[in-house]
Amino acid sequence: MLFAPPPDIATEVFARVPDSLRIHGRRTRWIEVNRQGEACSVFLEGPAFDRAGRLYLTDLAHGRIYRVTPDGVFSVVSEYGGEPNGLVIHKDGRIFVADHVHGILILDPDTGGITPYLENADVENFKGPNDLFFDSRGDLWFTDQGQTGLHDPTGRLYRYDGRRLDAVVSTIPSPNGLAMAPGDRLMYVCVTRANALWRVPLTAEGRPYKVGNFIQLSGGLGGPDGMAVGADGSVFICHVGMGAVWGFTRLGEPLCRIRSCAGLGTTNCAFGGPDGRTLYITESQTGSVLRATVPVAGHRLFSQAD
Image 1 (tube, one colour):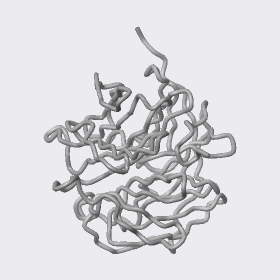
Image 2: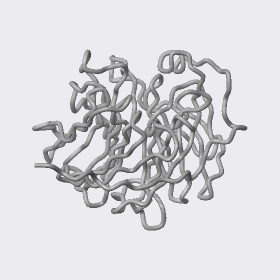
Image 3: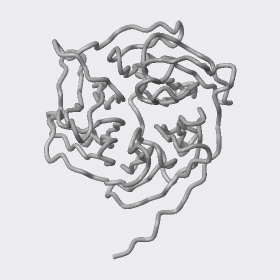
Image 4: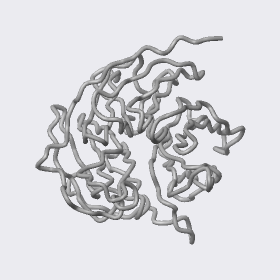
C-alpha cells in the first residue's frame, strides 16, 4: 500500500541569537569533540517556557542559558563551565538542566546561580545526561546518553522521585529527547543513533514492559533529537541534520512535516503561544528559534499545573 506524503508546514524565524551574544573563536571541549574543532559561536538546545511566556534555551557549546522575551529579545541568564543540553521547568519556577559533564543541575532564574542536584548514579558516574522531563506527579525522568550508539547500546532512561533513582531502561543506543504521553503510562524516547523513536509502556508501578520501536526514520545527518507530545497523544520529532520536525498521530500515522526555513540543525521543540498550538523549534546551525502553527495543541506539562 502506498501512502501520500504528509503535508508540509512552513516555519518562520521567531528570534535569532544576536551577534553581540555569540562567542567567536572560543575552543571548548564540546566543540573539539562534537564539531571536530569547527567554529561554533552558539549551539541552541533545550527550549522550555515559563508561566510568563518567556522561553529558556541552552547553549551547549559555551555553557550558557538564555532567556527570550515574548517579543524575541535574548539575554544571558547564566554562563558556567558546563555543557547544558536539555532544560525543563518545575511548577515552582526552578529550572532543571541536564548537563553532559555535571549531571542534573538546578538553575535559579532570578540570580543565574547553578546548584548540583544529581551528580551521579549512586557510586557510578553518569555517561552524560541529555534531556529531562517531569511527569504529572513531579517525578523527574532523564536520558543518560554519553557517547553510546549502535556500537554501545548502554544508554539509560532514569526516573528520580526525590528519594530514589531508578534506571528504568539500560540498553538504549543513544537516548536523547523524551516526553510522556497523556496519562503517565507511556514514555517516548528519541534514539538518535538508531534513527528511531522508542515506545516505553509503563505499569501502574512505573516499570517498563514491551519496550518497542515506534517510529523508524531514515536519512539525515544525525537523527531524532528532541521531541514534544500533543494533547491528543501525537508526537513531534525533531530530526537534526534533516532540517525537519516530523509529526505522527498516537498510532504512528504520518501527520505533517515541518520544514526549517533556516538550517538543518533542528534540535528540539516546545509548544507555546496563546492557544498552545505554536511549536517553537531550536535550529542550532544558524542559532535561531523557528516557529510554526501545528494541527494540535501541546500536552499540558507539569510546569503548567496549578
